[in-house]
Length: 239
Image (cartoon, rainbow, N blue to C red; front, side):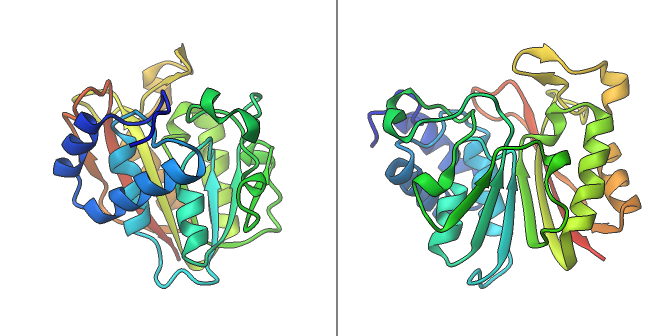
């Protein structure tokens, strides 16, 4: 077990192992996080989201081009690189993480992953400003798109469609207001926009369909222990 103050507790890890259908992926990611960033985030939804993303990746991963949108500080890029994927991360958070100060890290902030693993490339830029000349086989984003205004979300959806190769996979997890399908409308404690404007899980699915994606029925995990949110999971394929 890690001694990092942001590492998931044994109690919470056991609870999440009992809840996730992807137990081996969770164990792998916990070990990967502790090795590379010093912790696995002590936020229980991540113990469902990260394994789901890993389990839904194209296989095999060798040579697959993958983009993590709004990466923050998380174990997935390292696990994917270890499996041979070509990983790029993008995040525009103003707080830049120093690899020499890992004891101060949490899951937020911009990390230049290449400073930890040279197989990973990182860009410190907003995704809507990310160069659309780059194309990928898979794009994923963990609990980010619901924290931006709907006008930005729609721009991201168009960018996903531009950057994904035909047949490429898009994996999104989103926070939801508990007991509803309303997209969580807070970002770092501040209201992004009124809930009626912000939309719900079906709004995002409809936007993806309109942009040229075949969207699988979304699933929702409710009653996550010690969580303020429910979580929605969307898998879509670029037509």
